[in-house]
Length: 198
Length: 267
Image (cartoon, rainbow over all chains, first blue to last red; front, side, top):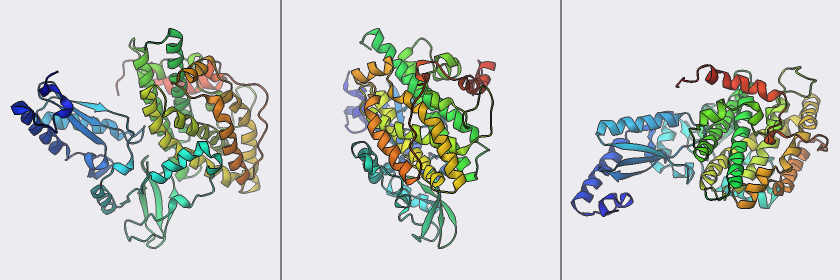
C-alpha cells in the first residue's frame, strides 16, 4: 500500500502532488453532497442530519461515500442512496455508497444549524438522548427503574416551533414518519411534529 | 468463520430466529394498517411494523452474507416455508383470543397490545445484551434496534396501563388477553440447542438469564394496570424450533404470495 492509496489519510494529510489532488476532489464531493437533503425534511442537508458520515478514497481506486441509516426501516434511505450516486455522477467522479450501521446514528449528531432549520420548518428539534440511554442501561441492572408511569416525564419542555410556548402536550408517540411524534401546543392550539430523540 | 460447522449453523439459526421474530410480528401488526381503532394507533402500529421489518431486513442481509451461496434477504424472507421459520409461536398468533381450529374472530386490540408488551420488553433486554455480541455486525444491528424497541415498550406499556386501569370492559379484555398469551412466553425461557451454543460462544444472549428482570418489569406494569399476573403453565410451544401453530402458514401465504407469483419481479 503506498501513500496515495491510504484512503483514510486522503482528506487530512497532503502526500505530495497526488495527495493534494485527492484533497481537492474530496472537498468537491463534500460541496456537491451539501445540496442533498433528507427527502422527508427538505430543509436540512444530509451532513447536518448526521446521515452523511465520511467521504474517502481517491480517483484511482474510486471514492466511497459513507452514509448511515436513521431508523432501521426508514424508507428514505434508498432515495438517499440513489441521490448520492446521481450527484457523484454529475460531478463526474467514480464513487460507491457504503452503508455503515456502527456507530448507530443518533439525533445528538444533528448540528445546531439543523435544529434551527427544523424549528423554522415547523418541526420541534430533538432533546439530547443522554437521558433515554441512561434509562435503558439502568433497565437491566435495576429492574425497578423501568416503570411506565412517567408518561409526562418525556414530554417536558418541548417548545412549540410556532409560538415558542412550553405549554405543549403529546398527542401520539408516533407521527407522520418513524422519527417524529405528534404534539399539540396548548397556547396557540397548533399541532406540530417533534423529532424524537434516537 | 473459523469455528466448527455446528457453531456456524447455530450462529445462522440464531440470526434467522431474530429475523423471523421481527418479520412475523411486523407482518402481523401490519394488519392494523387502515383498520386501527383510532387514527393515531393506526399510525403507531404501522410505524412499529416499519421498525420491525427494517430490523428483519438487516438481520436477513447479515444471515445471507454468512450463508453465501446466492442467499439474499428476499430469498430468506419470501422463499422459506413455514416449517423452517424460527419465530416464537407467540408472534404468529392472530389478534384475537383462543378459538378452536381455524375459527376466526374480529381483531382485539388488547391482544395486540399485550403481545407487544410481552415481546418488546423481552427484546429491550436482548438487544441491550447483544450490543456486546462477538459478532460485530449483530452488535451494530442491536445498537440500532435497542433505540427503536424503547419506543415500542413505552407504547405498549402505556396502553396496557390504560386498558387495565380503565373501564371494566377494557380491564376484562386486557386480563383475558394476558391469560391467553402468557403461556406462550414459556417458550422464551427454554433454550434451544442453537441458543445454548451462541450463548456459550459469545455471539448470542443467554436468554434464560434475562427471565428474572423480564418478570419484574412485567409485574411492575401489571400492578400499575391493576391486572393479575397469570400463571404460565401447560404446553410449551416450539416455534423457534420450527414446529408452529396453524396460523403461521396463513400469515406467510399473504406475505410471500406476491414475490412467489413474480419471482423475477424487481421493485
